[in-house]
Image (cartoon, rainbow, N blue to C red):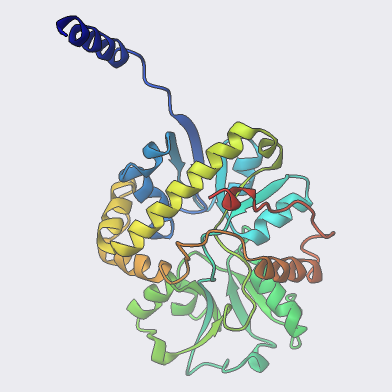
Length: 324
């Protein structure tokens, strides 16, 4: 018996000295700076959900000068968070981006106008100046104007497009009659500046069926031919959704984790808690699969506006989410 115990102990010691299997590296490129918009990914890293899936995650922040589509196409990331308008436009131009999951099911995009201003309904848009973000964020707006039959080249029968900063300064300074905001970000900035909801006319892209899919997860199509890469993406998405669920259930802790990842120190805890509560309304933690009806609406809007020149094929796959 003593020999048996010694043998077992020796075997256990030998196993303990074996090197651990290296985790699979995954680099994620965000669409914007660290904020609760991406809390699920930061939480999944902080709580060890990626490690549980044998993934060594690197999360790269975005900025106004960083295009996640370009970073992904250039090999600077394995997966990127991007809006589908930009992703399909990149694919149309030769970069084969593929949507593998769609955590964000609803859009947070709004256009807001002062209630005491000249815009009360869509019929008031002609001749007005509307603030819009660019860098691929303009596609939902352009598709909406096309749907209304309005030119974006200005004039009394069209609208003048102001290239808006990523804040509400154009509204405060009166540079635009209406501006673009996200429910989870600039809408609060507007309220803090005195433009509370009761003082606004609000156009909600989702409620008008003008929303195009936001914050999906994209990879490069050639990588999906590799079985090991596909398996890695299944584990990545599974861990990410676990992170999103935890973040939504624990918004204050999630906000603190986001702040821990904000090297600029610009984010404020109160704002991140608010953002987390609003982001939670847009995500379905139980179903990260792409809604094909929403995809088809997005594709049609981009084709109608000639943002993309041909009907895309292979722009999404359900294989990753099916495997969950």
